[in-house]
Image (cartoon, rainbow, N blue to C red; front, side, top):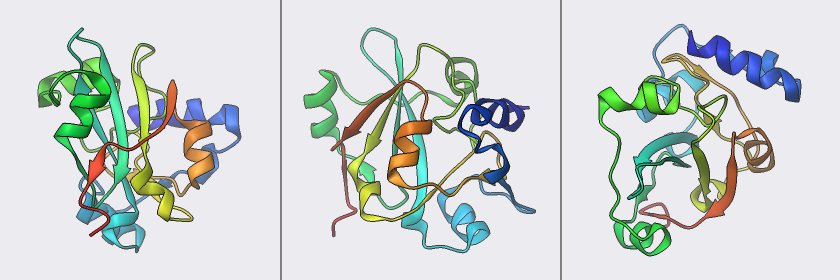
Length: 159
């Protein structure tokens, strides 16, 4: 199970016991916000994309942010193309509903969107449809696999 993979990965940071398992699903931003008892914007959603060279990336963004196609194209040099539902688990290492930047496949790069930096803490998933961990921006950067740093790729969250 993917949550066990994340728990094992988080041991290197001594953060495995901070993973929260909810009694209900947290597979969408809305469900996760209800489960965590916070506003939807504080859910750190992890979006998976394929680049022009067929490599995969993750963008972790605030729950109320949307990827800005023009920013994405300028940054990566190609149109934003999300992975299909069938591609996500084999290419990223986690199934839809539990995709997170922790314990992912080795060749996947993670980018953190600045939409999250307005919060002291937020909740990314932890590999299953009913898990999360509360982290600070600094912890997210430290814990994220193959982290490429903070980027400005989203819109809609400043309005």
